Length: 119
Image (cartoon, rainbow, N blue to C red):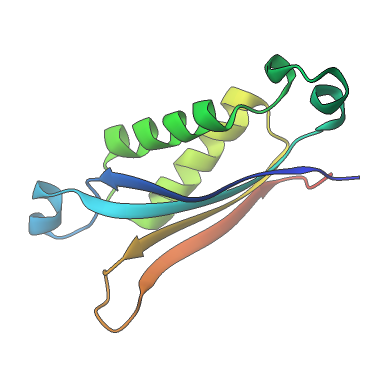
């Protein structure tokens, strides 16, 4: 059985992009996460300490993207996935990173990666 913890549509303002003008402004990024996590123990005990803390993960994602200031979405996604897996002990995750407005004809552009072994 695989349980997933979800965070969808997390908005983060960060410096990202390859053009000089993009390095001088913040742009809105949208993050979706699916993370494999065994929810049986926290559910049985009703103990938040055993759960994957949505607020803590969200805060870590925001801080990471704001500090990293990657040029490419691909780099940001790769490094963020590695950081989350290592910090929280997540066996598998799917991460979508979108940059709304990057292409005028599209609602957003982005990348979706999966890392780790899905249980």
